[in-house]
Structures are given as C-alpha cells and as structure tokens.
Length: 243
Length: 342
Image (cartoon, rainbow over all chains, first blue to last red; front, side, top):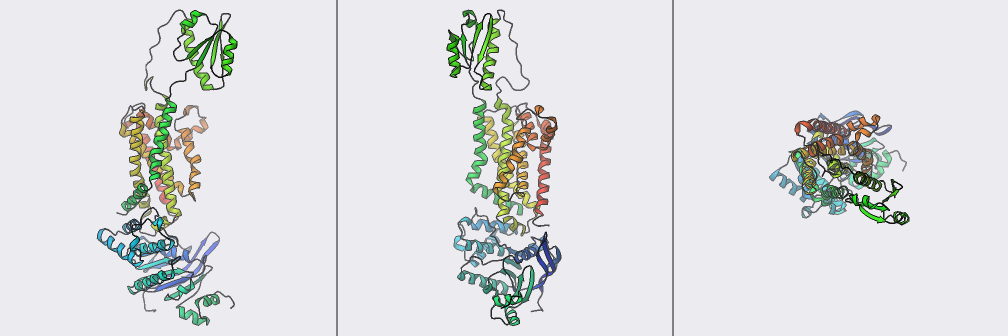
C-alpha cells in the first residue's frame, strides 16, 4: 500500500478553541484510492478534523496538505466532495432544485448537469422522489440526498461525516457498495463513524479518542495487535482500558 | 455563473413562501392604509354649549366646524359636560365671556379651544378686518399629517420588513448548516453576499414599486417630484436594510434573538427619521441621527415627495446610503471569515 500516492497528509495538527484542546498533535497520511475510516466516540474530534480537511476550519498548529498543496485553498476545495454531519439542505425546495443549485455552484450546466443528477440519484436510490420537497423527506432520505450532492461534481476526494446515520441496514449496505464502486474508480474516501461494525468495511482505520490519534492500521492489523476479535475490543485496548 | 445560481435559489425560495411575500408586500400596504385613515380622518367637531348668551352674539357666531347647542341655565350645560356630551360651554358673566372645558382629552380640548378662538373674535368684533390671504411655499392647505409623515413611514416600513426577512433567512442559512455547505464549495465569500444582495435586491425592487405606487396613486400621498427618484431612494434604503440584517444575523443564534434587534436597531431610527421634529431633540443626542440610514432616506424622500426636489438635491443622501451599504457588505465578508478564511 505504501507505494501509492499520498492524497491527504495531516502534519502535527493541533486545534484548540480557547483553552479547550480538541485535536492534539495528529500525524496521518491517507493514500489515494482507499477508504479511510475515522473511528471514535462523539466529541472525540472527528468532525473538527474533517472540517479542517474540507477547508472549513484551520489548525491552530501544524498543516494539512491535500494533493500536495496546503489547505485551505479554493482550488483544492473544487476537488473535494464534502458531506456534513447535519443535512445542509434547503427544505423549502425540491430535491431536484437542491441538486440543480449545488451543481451550478460547481459549474455543472445543461446536459451534463441533468445527467449527473440522474446518476447520483440512482446511486442513492432516490430517483423516484426527485420532485418531492425536501421537507417531506425522511431523515434517511435527507442523508442520502446529502450524499448525492457531495458526489455531484465527481470529486477525487470524498469527505463524509457520519454518512450512514439513520439509514436502514439494507440501504446502508447498498451505500457501502457505492463507496466500494467509487474506490474502484480511484477515488479516495474519508468516512467518520462511531458505528464499530462499519469500521470493518474500511481499508484502514484511524482511532480517535479525546483529540488524539491512538492507532492507525487496517482492521485486521488493529485486531491482531491487540489480540482482539472485534474493533470495539481493539479500541478499548488502545484507549488504555483494562479488559 | 455561481452568483446567479444563488440569486435563482433565493428567488425560488421566496416565491414558494407565500406568507413571507405577503408580509413583505401587503403588511406595509395595510399599515400605510390604516395610517392614512387615522391621520386623514375629518377634523374633530367639538360639541359646544352656549349658556345665556345674548342673541346678537349667538347670531354672529359662525357655527361652522362645531355643533352648537343653546342652554338656558348653566346647570343644564354642566350636566351635559359631565356626561361628556359637551366638550365645553361659553357663558357671559357680567360683560366677560368665560369658557368651561371638559378637559380630559388634550386633543379634544385643543380642537375646542381652536374653534372658540377662531369663532369668538369674529363674532365680538363689530368691525371686520379683511382676512389675510395665505400662500404656501410647499404643500397646500389640503396637505394633511399623512402627507408629511407618509414619506418617512414609507421608508420605515420597507426598511423594517426587508431587515427582518433578510436577517432571518440568512440566519436560517447559518443554523441549518447550509452556509457551511456553501463555504465547502468553491463559492467565494463575496459571491455569497453578492448573491443575497442581488436576489433580495430584485425582489425588493418589485416590492418597493408596488408599495410606493400604492401610497402615491391609491392613497394619494403628496407627490411633487419624480416617481423614479422615490424608487431609487427606497431601493437603496432597502439594500442598506438587507446588508444590515444579514450582518446582525451573525450575532443572533435564533429567530427570537433576531427579533431582539428590532427595539435596539430599528425602533430608535424612527426617532431620528424626522417623524418628530429633530430640532427639539436634545443637542447631545441629535448627532445620532447622522448614524441612522433612515434619517438620510426620510430626508431625501420628503425632499422629493413634498418639496419636489430633483436628483441634484438628493444625490448626497443617496451616496451616503450607498456608503452604508458598502460598509455593511465589507463587514459581512469579514464576518464570514469566521467560517472560512479564504
């Protein structure tokens, strides 16, 4: 895996809001074409870290590099697809109008726009609800629409903050299949989650606790190192908790 | 173009929100109409009693503008006065006229006194002087309170409603996370503000045209100058309200906190807008009028509508308002840096 190009490089990143330290000296390389999972409880600092990668925040110390250039930069932002933890959708507009608006922000027009909208909505299985107002969508549908919007402009790097919250297991599986397809197309995915069983589906994992990166490796490696059978157990060991 | 995408989206949302459109267009129309009826109602007709007044004087009294009743005894008149059926009565004691007023409502008292002061000398003086001829520099004897307050109120309502709606919709953009989502796209901060100014600006143009046309052509508000100048002033004022609303929404966490800006930011502007005579405001406070956008707009509106001013006369005020607008836009862009530095 090491011969692959580095896509994201997090270098000595710390972040504090006032006295409250959210991230502490994080060093991490994420390679092109992998699904990297950031695993940790809520409040661990996952969202802060991915926001910095998406250009919405900056580290207090250290640097984030994407595609060998320093963030934040507007040129890099175009190559990222970001899905926030909260569904940032216009509820008074229809799904299609939301998609049209966001695709125009990325310069997608006319035929190309219509085609991309059709493709992403098929991927998240919402093609039948295109003209519905978003306010009539269920929580899971909104999540999927947010994901569709993040995919619109065919970004090389996808940063997805808790993409499968509130989605039923069947759909969750199909969404993970979509992630695998995207990976096969050479895209890089960074996915945060606090659901341990999702962690097994990632190529590599970064375990975060209290703003520190406590372990990095493939799910198999992490389990092996701690002689655990599940990621949850491994997390406990790395977190310094007695079993 | 990215800005146009934003403009299109804002207009789409506005069109879909029928209630907000109603508020922006019909609320000012409704309030202006009510004010029209309040201010332009007929003058109050005082009820006046005459007690034991010599017949010659009673005949001389010009009873126009009042309802005059003749009483034989003062006790009778007093009873009517206590029952509020009479606003005042006149009696002659010895050779001196004296007046007794009901006196609980200053405006009624004022109207009664005005009428008596007007009617009495005419009746008591045997020799009539020719009445002076009155000419007006601005306005006319027809001009009512509504015509003088109207231009200010027109500006105020547009300011108030645009401030509120723009502020709340930008606030919602922040609280629902869509602002953050916009900043995770290649949209520049200036483009976000420009999109809002253009989107709401377009809508405000329509709104201002309807309200102004209604005030002038339906309510018959005095209009000496050109319609287009009124529109120009209203529009630039609306843009000031828009940019100020967006700016202040950054300091509110929810809709209720946005409302809290009304008594602090919007209402005080009324006092400096010329609705009340500015010369009577304490000197240490009067400089504040120069900090309120409504002051400049109201002055310019009154110049055009009442005094028939041309562009040269209002240009300075329009430029000052444009200055406010640009200042707020600049601060808005700076405030957005809180979310994304670049």
